[in-house]
Length: 524
Image (cartoon, rainbow, N blue to C red):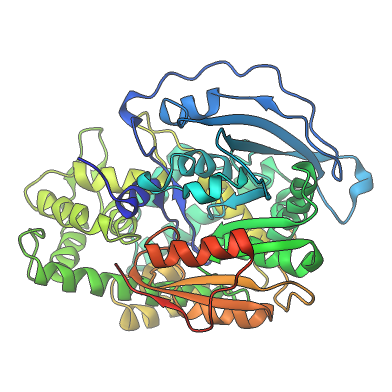
């Protein structure tokens, strides 16, 4: 059965619950069940030095390993650039390699340059999203009008994916973290959460004693300018989603005169502190769940837990605290795993029906739907292993954070936010624990105007749970040259959602035509 762009995007993009919010491609748009086995990568070209152009080598194995095939009419080339571990001390000679993938259409003509892409996270792979988006708009990817004029360049930021990846959380601790109660009420449960997060932080500190602070967003934004030079562009054209908007906004402040066009979709508000950002997400997810519940009541034929979806999910969480349903792989569907499944499903309307069915199946003693949703979010493999998504996510977020609340303050906020946001507030408060004992120097990103930058398009979705719509105008105003484009839809991020959004963004990327002031695109 043909799939619509947004349904495919739902399969490609899930999100991480962090103070920033993020998107992560997990599944291929087509033939994911028939993926070819990994092939052996050929000889790599040496990494480029910052300020010089890259040496590209064909790498058709990348799309084969990800989705089983290449997109028709597309070629794939790989390269890397060696960047200083610390841009503040480049003379040390220590470097990270930033991996890049260039995708070029056989029908390309009147080439404008490269379109750099980042899907968010922090922790998601820009190389992966570039591959998925190369399959075209019919499958949720980029319009032909864009791929015919730009090389599509995905890059994995430092510490992520193929770019000197940071790995410091064991699969056992990953499982324990996801399975733990999202709202640990008793003192014993709360102290267990504190101890687990402290153990993870100490383990990362032992493995990377002098590096953790170098995985910050500002360092990665400086890498972006090395990527710009490596692809041979005088100025940057960039499409960033979710956390990718923070990366793009930081780049805009550091290199305002090196921007051609920036599209920031699913805005993070850099001016929010650690606590305010977490509360904003709690509010956003609560609103998204209310929208899901309303849909459920209105369409009971598609929602087996109608008419009271909120009641059904709340009951499932409570039941799992004492009598979790066992899964086939030996895991129990604890309240933690159920909560992760709920989060996973709220990033797009396409996930709503899956959540309703998963909860109904759980009521009948079958937890597999819950684990399918949760594992998609966690990037957990069938063998119990994980990608480095959450290692990188934790490392970047903690490097970026300035002042973090104390354990005592988090415990207090847990109770306050539980009252304000019944399903998500307590969990988002607990989500601040990992950075409390982070054993590294912090490197907060700047939060000011991009003086001298051209107009920057900031896209917001009114029903976005992870990066609430209110952030959109805040980011545009902070940058000083931002222009808001609104999608009156549900889910996390907007482009390429509807003809209205596609038209507005494409005109800007192709011709630098800025969307008119106040443009709002309908949901359908």
